[in-house]
Image (cartoon, rainbow, N blue to C red; front, side, top):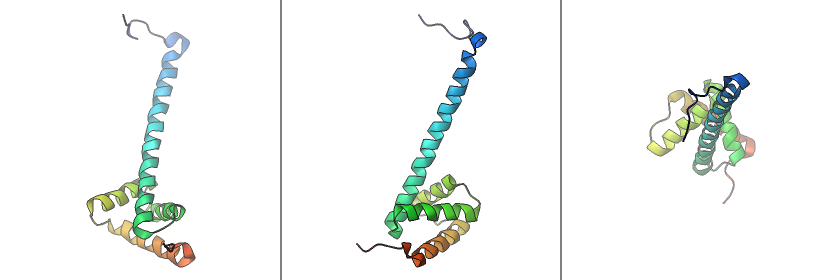
Length: 114
């Protein structure tokens, strides 16, 4: 037989607070893992489409994020949507992405011979 918390409140010893903190931490960790996965996928798009090294792909995303004042995760999702749906990038993201790619291609971070 199970009992509910309503019947046996545990606030006396702080367990409810601890459980609530752990649940919040768990939710934050899940969100961080999801965000990290999206960024990694967007890096993969840049690696495949632009033939960049993964570290350079991350730097390109980071620069676009900084220059557009968008969160890195948001830039990553935008790039993924562009790659998966073949839609145009928003003008500000497209402009900054092209500029970041030019900077890195001219710096010698460009495509590696296959």
